[in-house]
Image (cartoon, rainbow, N blue to C red; front, side):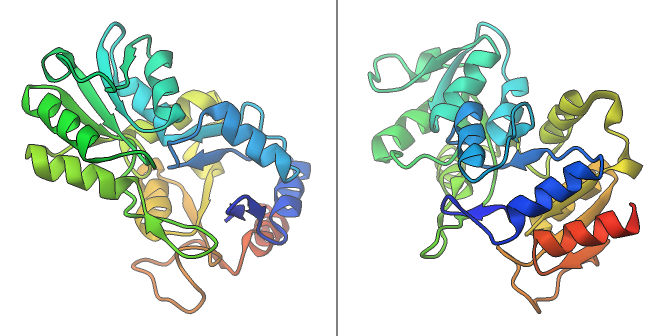
Length: 252
């Protein structure tokens, strides 16, 4: 809803600024787990949005599912490794597979362009040996300018199928992400004052339901214009620019 392939969706940068000028805080909650918070922040800065302190990823949410001192197999990008380190646990890359399965407390799986059969074998072995399976998100597809590609959920499904284990999921729309957002917002996280804006009912809409707040559907991503959805959102607009105008004008 903000960008696609690093390019800002027309009107989105101005929409964020308009919301902020109206006195509203804008937080960027993403199921993207491959990148660190600093990388997410830098990418937003590159299109003209200062998001310092306002970015939350599914990898961040995964950190609360890890205990200090645990050894965690990282099947994801730098964001997953960062989450493990934030939890004061040890990230295991799995490049050297000696003793991995027997010495891992948890496996975190997310979007990972370098994921291969070798890492699938390590993750499966670790989970079958007793490690907890944690998914950063269950999104089956990842949008790109040339069309969707397999997302983190597709990789999670492979590990879950091979290990015979259902993962605990950290990202939207699940409780760990809701708890992470409450921790970020503090006392301002009052359901009546929150609006979740997103392009997919199954993640963003359900996340709003988990938070007990309103949902604004934008039609610039996974839900094209004219497509009917399971439940009626509080706001339904062509893009973030239209949604921001509605929210500000309505003083909601």
